Amino acid sequence: MIHSKILPRHIRSSSSALIVLVAWAAISVSVRAADSDAMPDMPGMSHSSKATDLTGMTLDELYNMNVVQLNVLGGHTHCSGQLMFGYDYTHTHMSGLLEGTREISAAKAFSEGFGTVHTSMDMDMHMFDVMYAPSDYVTLMAMVPYTQMSMEHLKSDGTRFTQHTDGFGDADVMALWTVYGNSCTGGNRIVLNAGMSFPTGAIDARDHRDGKAALPLVPLEYLMQHGSGTYDLLPGITYLGESENWSWGAQTIETVRLGRNDHDYRLGNEYGGSGWVAYAFTDWLAPSFRVNGKVWQNITGADPALAANTTPEGRPDLRAGSRIDALFGINLFAPKGFLTGNRLSVEGGLPIYQDLKGPQLGTAWMISLRWSYAF
Amino acid sequence: MRFNENAIRPRQRPRPLRLAALRCAGSLLLALFFALACPASLRAENVLQREYEIKAAYIYNFINYIDWPQNAFPATGGTITIGVVGQNQFSAALEVLNGKQVKGRTVALKQITDIKDLDQCQIVFINASEKSHLPELLGKLKDARVLTVSEIDGFAQQGGIINFISEHNKVRFEINPDAARQLGLNISSELLKLAKVVKS
Image (cartoon, rainbow over all chains, first blue to last red; front, side):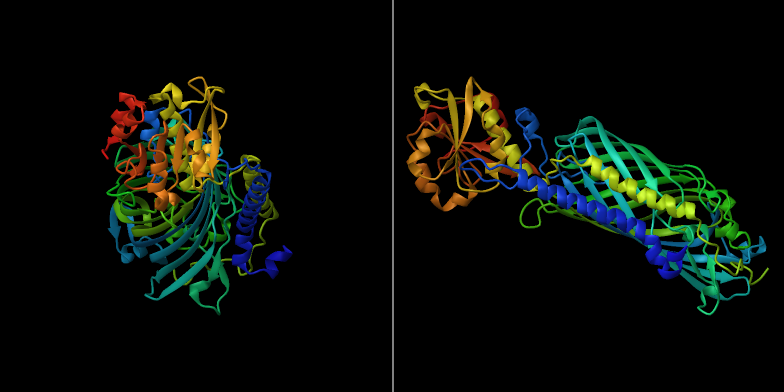
């Protein structure tokens, strides 16, 4: 392809995601502008935008209605007309080779026939997301991640090297349908999640052999690729609950891969579940605790470009595993003032259980910073 | 087995056209998804506006739980007038009440620009922007059969009837039943049960 030769790799991999973001922004701005132009003024009254009619609610419902939604962990939903932009930064540090639940040494991995092993990996993920609620019962969401990865290698002769890659990942869109309860009044709610992941992330990420600029570019292992290369279904179900100061929830979201990608493989399906609880000490501060669990399968097929790769991470039959993470967080809200609508969350944690078909690089810890603005 | 990890084909494999087409199609589908998902009446909703929408719905509900003396209404016309003193987003939230039927009367909204018009209303909402004029406004209304509502700290203690307050991310309200009684307004016990009762 001609443009492949002209454009730098990271720009090629990100072009699709950029198209999405620009299109979404353009649609939002144009529709909102058209809408404000069309708004008639009532004599003697002024307004900034048309209000939602809540007069159908009872006194009790109004009395218990949250002004700002507190339950924002997991697949939360929004009130009709609300738009939210979010940015998520997550740093994940992976280290240690695991076989099953036990960590093994690099020497043991070499004795099993591997020429090189990964000793650690650092991943920085920048996730941009937008949510819009066309009604109190439906919230739409789109997310695009940008990842930067760096992996440390150890060869059987004792030499070490590092490889890097960065680029946009797969873009997800999701509809969240509240089938029980109401997003605005809070309380117990059940939300069905129906999403799809689009193959906007690269599956041909490369870096120089042995991390040396003088050596040719070689394909990086499955773990270092940014996308799946396939269209994936994201079905799920979320339970959200709230009381005066507590909010809690549970969610399961699956990733079901469809077909094979152009490198003749399909990543394994993923089955994820999480449960969380948060306590609002004040209108603006709520610490939280969350448990995340995930089970994922091996790769079906194999990338022919990785046939000669001698690392465990290049083996499609050594990708499966399961993990449970425990995460503590601090969530800050701005219910009033010029920062109204802003939220800031910091969450960090580590795995409390890992069972990997290995040798496979384990996860050591992760920390995330999330900012969102709803208006 | 050394030096052969990643030692694969020296030339980069051409990126298949199908994958590029898939990505492009995916991008267009995403854009189309949101274009269809956003109705033409897409309106960004301010969190502050949500608070005022709740307050507007409260005021609508209050009408059902409060009885005015008959002479509080004009002899002709079946309207119940809500006057708004001061300007802010509450005016927009109140617009949804305009023309609604409640207790056999039609709700009419009126932006108060002249203090003389206050006693033509059955409900007067005093915006927080009018805090400095509060004594003057309450003085003007002290004998009028008008339900006064506000969101100013200490409003009910100063002689107002209902004041909205924020509690645990929710809109709650204080009621001064003595002030209501003096004007001949009867507040139902159901409403008082939810309120924080205060005295002048």
